[in-house]
Image 1 (tube, rainbow, N blue to C red):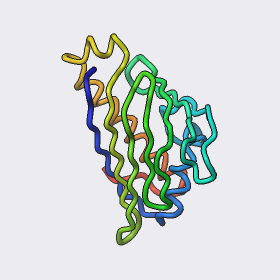
Image 2 (image 1 turned 45 degrees about the vertical axis):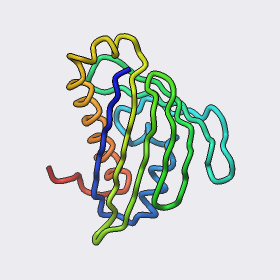
Image 3 (image 1 turned 90 degrees about the vertical axis):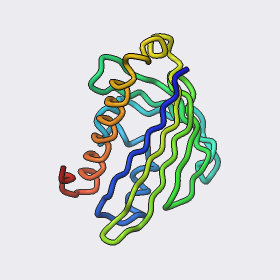
Length: 156
């Protein structure tokens, strides 16, 4: 299975606590993050949110959707969230938030493998498109987060 390591970084002019609450509430992502078709809770976690399993369906510019489950493994408000993915993608995602002058720096790391036979078969030639697709989705996430927080779009 081809492996991918993605790192996305955003600087958002808002308090870390406010941003953490929005990112941690992934059930609301379809309301503000373009490309997130649905998020459903499959299994509850403990009181801190550890062990909760949510099923995500994503769709971007390319003509396919991806569905995977994410089990929460780390919840450390307001600086860190991590989870393990299984399904059409398998791997680990990690959110890191840090206060910086004027707001919050967000770093998302996504170490993942594709499990779909057709994605694995096409990876040698399609990998650049899969990377581009991820970047588009994450750009939509930043734009949506800014809107959700009532902020101006990021300068490009």
